[in-house]
Amino acid sequence: MGEGQYRLADDVRERVNELDNQVVAAVDGDDEDAFHEAFEEMLDVIRKEGEHLGDEEIETSDVIVPPADTSMAEATAEFSGEGLIPD
Image (cartoon, rainbow, N blue to C red; front, side, top):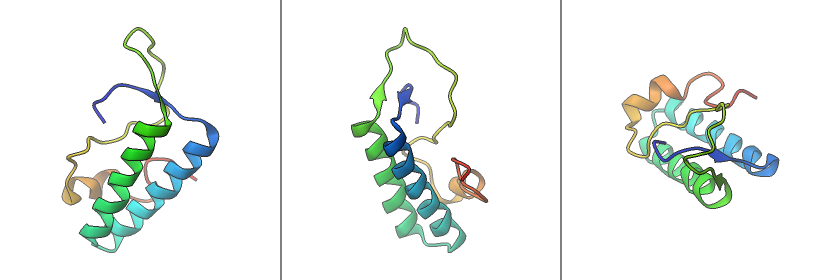
């Protein structure tokens, strides 16, 4: 996201995964409105419910989330198959 790292609790990670699946479905269905809605909600959940790690705390990331200004065309490459978070 370009906003540093976040640690997600298991329940938050599950919600993010559900939203990731919605983003994949929107991209596969070429539904730009649904893509933006699900992607923005996913970012919002990460920001509000994830634990933002400070700059001094660097960990290996399981997932790298694209930046908030990702376009539908750019998302086609990122959100395909199993999405960002494999089921």
